[in-house]
Length: 169
Image 1: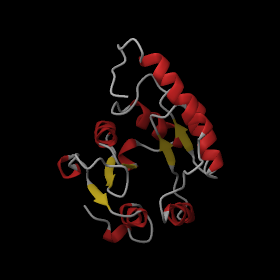
Image 2: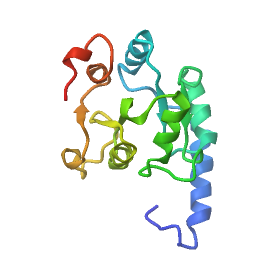
Image 3: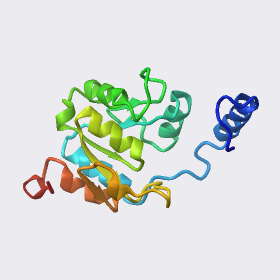
Image 4: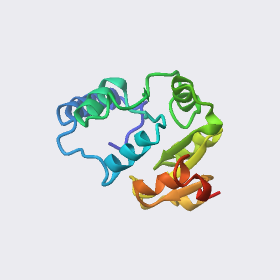
C-alpha cells in the first residue's frame, strides 16, 4: 500500500487487507518442498521444535491447523504473544522457555534480516533459509547468521543427532 501507519487511510486499508487475507488463508499456501520430511526427521530424533512468527495468533493457529502442523509444534509464539515482535528477542526467548530449552541450545531458522537479528539477540544459533522469501534487494550474506541453508533438509546438519559430529561451525 506504500503508506505509513500515520496516514489517514492506513487503518481502513489495513483492515480491508486483513479481511481479504483471512478469507484466502491457506487457499494457495503449502509447505516448502521437503519441510514435511525435515519435521519427521526432527521428530524421529526426539527434538523439540516450534514456530515464532510476527503473524497474529488469529491467523497463525488457523493456518497451522489447515497445514496439519498445529498439534505437532511444541510451541507457537505469534506477533501478539509477547509485548514485542521480531527483531526483538522476546518472542524467541518465550519459545525457548515454553519448550524448556536454553536459548544457547536452540537453532533458529529464518528468511528475513529481522529473524537473524532476533536469533542473535536471543543467544541462539541462527541459520538463514535462503529458499525462503528473501527480497532480491536484500543481501543475506551480510546478516550475522551462523550459517545458511538452501533447502530444508540441510538443517539436519545443524541439529543434534545422527550428524552432530559433522555439524558445521
